[in-house]
Structures are given as C-alpha cells and as structure tokens.
Length: 147
Image (cartoon, rainbow, N blue to C red):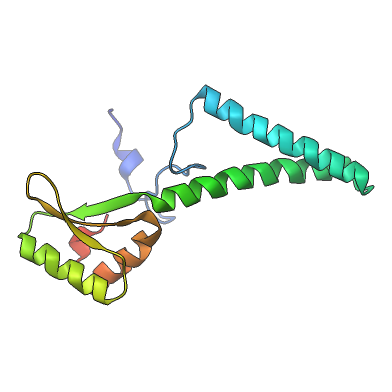
C-alpha cells in the first residue's frame, strides 16, 4: 500500500497514533456490523420499554439502552483482547532474553521467555499487561524494544 509522507509525519498534536478502532480483537465485515446494529436496536427497544414503564422520556431510555448494548459489546471485546498473548522479539542472544525475562518476573510481571521452533527467544505476555511491561522495559533502559 502506497502512502504519502504526510500519513506518517508527526503532527504537532502528539504524533501519529493511527486509526482509533472500536473493537480490538475483531475486524467486522458487513454481517458483523449488522449484528452490532441489531444488539443496539434490541438495547434501544429494552430501554424504550423501561422508559415507558417508569414514565421516563422514551427517547432517553432508547438511547441509554442502545449505548448500553454497545458498551457491553466493547467490554466483552476488550476483555477478550486482554487475554490474547503478544510478544517482543529482538536479535540478541538467548541468555540476554532470559535475563530480561527473569528481571521482569522479579518485578511481578507475568512474562515468559519463550523459544520458538527455530530457537529464537522472545518475551511473551498478555495484552492487558503490555503497558506495565513497556514501562518496566523503559525502566531497564531497553527503549529499543518498544514500539
């Protein structure tokens, strides 16, 4: 994909951050987005019925129900994304990877030094711990491993 320089250039408002995505663990096609709309419509219907039952404005109930359904979907997706594993690989010797993995484990981070079928070592951790792992790597002076 050919992109111009302006796409990658840092802006004065904080640099390139990429596109903000609603869901992290899935990429939805038309059927997936239709299911999201259906959940929001069902939530809106439930909110409308609840608004009529308690004599509240039906529009506010519908909107709250639809947003509640969307919030549940996003919450389930973020929880699923947090359980997925990710890793950091770099071309140093396996002893260095094991040493850094041991240091991170001593700091209480759930990190594993993992070896793939080719004998390459990497650090594996869950996405929910990624921010803490990056902060710990920065504290160890390993800025070269951060994305």
